[in-house]
Length: 460
View 1: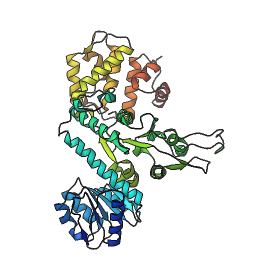
View 2: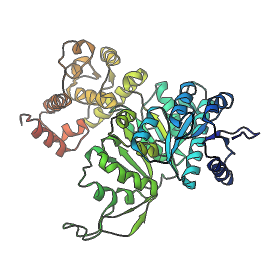
View 3: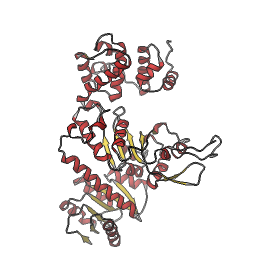
């Protein structure tokens, strides 16, 4: 069977079951979506794709001649930007992982749920509309063409690469897409998530940020779903979890890949079904929450290694925004340094008015593995040391870890690096814990805990 509509269609469905092909066609057309092209012989798919600009292809996994994964690999080899979804009668993690490795954007299980199928096609076509809108602006994205520049007022950026990121934020904010923001630690993923929320139709509802690395197995359900009174010994009153508290708004899941795999299925269920039970309760609670997740890891690699569920990734990755590291946005380094200088000079009542040329040049040479956060942690203590009206290289010299010093420095573990930095900030502040906490961007309790953890000598 081969059916190609006279009018161009962005959707192709491939399955050797002709009855299922006609059923999918009826489902999509009745919902107002474009009539899909249909084909039952997997041997003819690639030729069809070469002559028609399909945007979404649904591929049955088990077919005669070539199976879905073989066809997927061929399509992605020639048309890497075409969205492909594997459809299978078995819900096997290994197959989903293999499909993702080959470039599938989603994985559906038979019998197909009509609502999920329609939602999948809708969001895929909407994603292309977003991409078309960005492409319409041309290859070069500029800040002056932003529709809502005031929404980004808290973010200091002048590099063209960040203009693209801001345009992506504007494009996706008005939708209800789940978003994954990827980027190295310290690049500002949470700040970007807050901008998406402010520009969305959910802006008047709550925004909650949760660091998934801090959520253990024992407290996950209580933290996210809440509990009923008497659910356990210390549950003297009922409690709302994050999902219930963020109802109508946005839930930001920072470092999503840190969540234990055994808990990912529970998170997936709530995202898919939009309902949950409080601990100790049999009452179903419906929830309407937009998910924005962030990670500093390669999620595809985490899936391949079995540390992250492919089906969870498919649900949260409706749109992806990648924030480039600071070393790739050189035009942002000095504006950010001046921004942090002004903040910390004001908070410490110092009249420092700018960066010395020597310090500015040195900053531009740095690679900043800790990104924007590292830059601020370099500027803040230097402000305390500076005696003049200009922030000099001498004030920042002991804090700088630029190329010429890295030539002889030993390779450090993250713990050792953190210990040395905390120790250095405590020395600069004369052991003042609250001031050190402010510079480090953590609370005082964390400073005390780190001092105890690393056995840092008390010089008070």
